[in-house]
Length: 368
Image 1 (cartoon, helix red, strand yellow):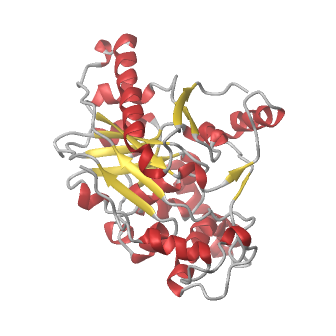
Image 2 (image 1 turned 90 degrees about the vertical axis):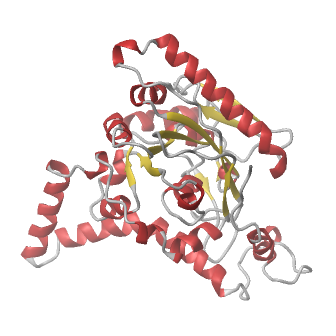
């Protein structure tokens, strides 16, 4: 069974690319600047992406302004807030404070419709167990993962009732004052082992969504018929699954790697070596990429309008075992099962999105 959300938006996407509802109008591939006659609802979609992009930077700017504001009490307040963040705050690792009213705002529908993002259900997931959803590929920023699992714009709650999923990201995202509050209200949590175990132990249906390739995989996010997935030696999620009896669910998004163009950086190149060195120092990668701008299509930080089709595969049942019973052989067994299930999911649906000759390649974490 496959379920798709809002398929009619594909027609809107074609009209946007053509800059008009008139089929005879030239496509945006031949344009530099966006036409003036774009409908307002499309402008609203672009606005959501602009604000989403600027949110962490605005929060950082606000923090600096409060620190150096000429009113002493504003400086005291922001210092107290930052002290609380670093000394007492626990919600990034304890399930967060998800607010469904915020996740269901029409704002996020505009966000999803910008691309558009479609969520496809291939089978039922009974809410009698926890799940670990493995999202692939990372892309540059994993926008499909955010749209599908940090909001209700594509209908995750409707398709999988009783599944309380938390989207997990790098802890560095929670180090910006005020932005951390926004993330926790969206149901986003820290991707640490402590956070994973805490959520999965909360009972039936409590689940996590991990972008398993991590930030290193972003350096391989190029529009291509070959998807390089950094998964070959990433097995920690399997041990977490065995510890908590969480079923493994492969998730693949066609189109995630097509949202941006990245400067060529093959493994072993000088640029990749520099990027890997910076990644080791800072904890996250720095891909050199560009998309489109607000008023022109050629260059900018906004993603290109390209459909993202996300498929949620069949679960792999995993037993719950005591730590001393979890062997490396058992981890390898379920890791292999997961990779095979992900490959099967990819091969089953790739033809629907013009990727008949495409393939996925499992690779190690790049050392340089």
